[in-house]
Length: 132
Image 1 (tube, rainbow, N blue to C red):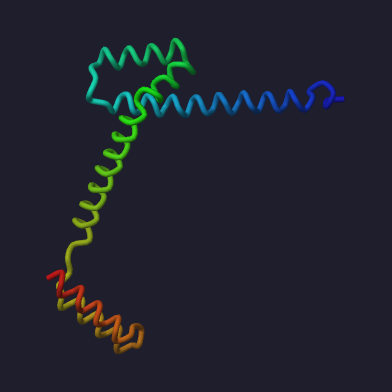
Image 2 (image 1 turned 90 degrees about the horizontal axis):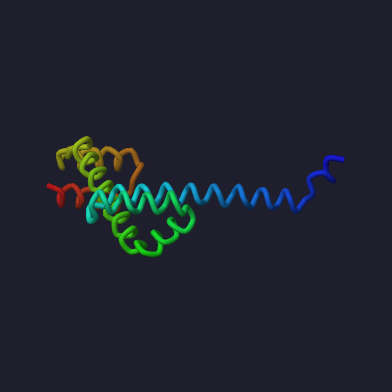
């Protein structure tokens, strides 16, 4: 009885509408994030884009994606590189540098225990001496 009141095509159509709305929301957040990250346009330019995207939702988002695709890519890459360099700097500050003689001593201990081979010990020794 319930299957006849809500046929398969209506279920399919409802799912399609839901996913289209979800994708639009995701793209909208992406556009707003990029828009607020930009420093090459003024506040009035940002406000104009926001009004355009709100007044004509799908059209506004797609026009922004078409007009600013290259800039979006560049800004995203710059943000990822900045985050990576901050993370690398943090890891270096936390990890610190150990003394090469300590690294070699640890390598010798592992070699005596049979955990590593002579070739692996030589690599550890070379890295320790190169880092000094």
